[in-house]
Length: 136
Image 1: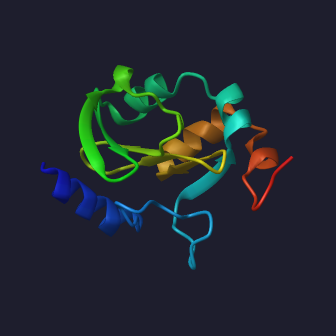
Image 2: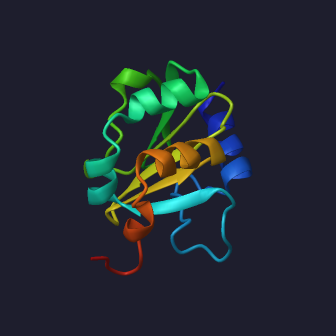
């Protein structure tokens, strides 16, 4: 799939605004099956994200969309799953889930199956939902 088609599908399915970003945190309307977590607590409690995604969706490759709209198809084990000065969004070839790592110290997960696994592995997640402008 071409870079343009990946971006169009993400924008269509997940209401993204790539290349400008994805703003479920402050959007005008909620996006179904998404949750925004505090990055520090997410990273502390969900450490095997590549395995979780591979097991949940039976995938080995993901699209990595870097801030600015650059799209790369990567092996799941090569995905950084973090904010490193640039924002990243990850999804599979069927756009069944999204993970968004942003500069707000937040991680947004989209996709009912992924969220259900996060809840099962991290029962205390409700105490670490990201809030604006700061969190504890």
